[in-house]
Image 1 (tube, rainbow, N blue to C red):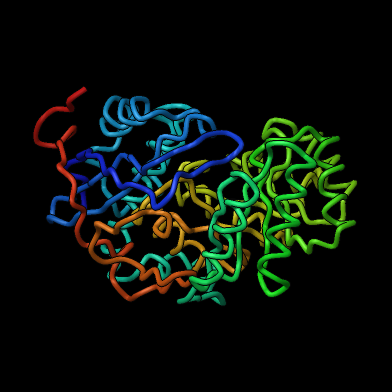
Image 2 (cartoon, rainbow, N blue to C red):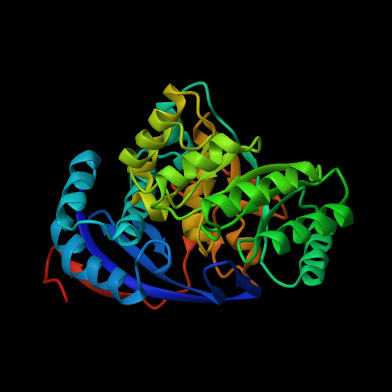
Amino acid sequence: MKIKSISLGYIDIPLVTPFKTALRTVNSVNDLIVKIETEDGAFGYGEAPPTAVITGDTKESIEATVRGYIAPAIIGMDLDDLDAVMKKMEKSIAKNTSAKAAVDIALYDLYAKRRNMPLFRLLSENDPAQTKTRLETDLTISVNDTDEMVRDSLRAAAQGFRILKVKVGKGGSKDVERIREIRRAVGPGIVIRVDANQGWSKEEAVRTIRAMEDAALDVELVEQPVSGHDFKGLKYVTEHVNTPILADEAVFSVEDAERIIEERAADLINIKLMKTGGIHNAQKICDIAQKNEIRCMIGCMLESKVAVSAGAHLAAARSCVTMADLDGPSLCSIDPYEGGPVYQGPEILLTEEKGIGIAKVPVLFEEVCSSTGSCVL
């Protein structure tokens, strides 16, 4: 079935509270939505958030990449040869992983619909022993004054979230205080994950993590303590602390994952579709992780239900994925979509809806490329 048209639009969803990390503060999800239609009238949806501080992709660059490079490259191609479509997209432009992810997600949505099955069942064909229909996600606690972070943590626990992902990275000793007070408030029954978002030097990371260990704060893992480019620093931290280290911004590609594993630079890997360029490459990282018995997390940027649901389908399909950081819809003040996985507090329930399951996207779309017309740059 050939790709007939590609259209673009934007979704704007206010957040419940501002999202604050060591890198940025965001008040709403303002993401590009991609709609791809095949010649039989089927639709597939994808999504990409502009996360310039992590991926380097802006709203303008994502749209320009889809319009000027990806759409003209794949329009008219046969969806039944999905590998060929993905290879053509990959070669159309270097990097720009968020734009590629949005198109990749829409293509997988369509392909699973073509196969008349939910996406997670299609993806689990690469991991036959694995099928999950329920996931548990953590909830992000933004970096703020300690008292506010404690209140946010208690509120999350009251809402049923058993796992908290606490943002730090703005001062080692202050970060220890934040975690100490949160642990004291929520008690021992709550899992705490710490995410520094590249906010520490390697020495500060070791000093801070050891202080958390000495204080018996029972931190499950620490995510990306140092710069994503600093593989040596990441390895140094991993070797000098007991707490498991999760590589996030250090892993964009299959090659990055291989290097992390070969050098033992981290204990765990966070796979995000916006870093890998979509499901196609994320699957390859899962294959490598499973071969090397490395546990993975499926995470998300500030994404709404379309992209997060694609991540949820992948998490449900692969046995190496033992952790989910897919709280994007929980951070949004409303859910404007129809269909898709059901988000009930910390639970994500996969359904038997075909593809990703998103049936309606309330976005004004503009057709940018068509097999019967021209591509609009």
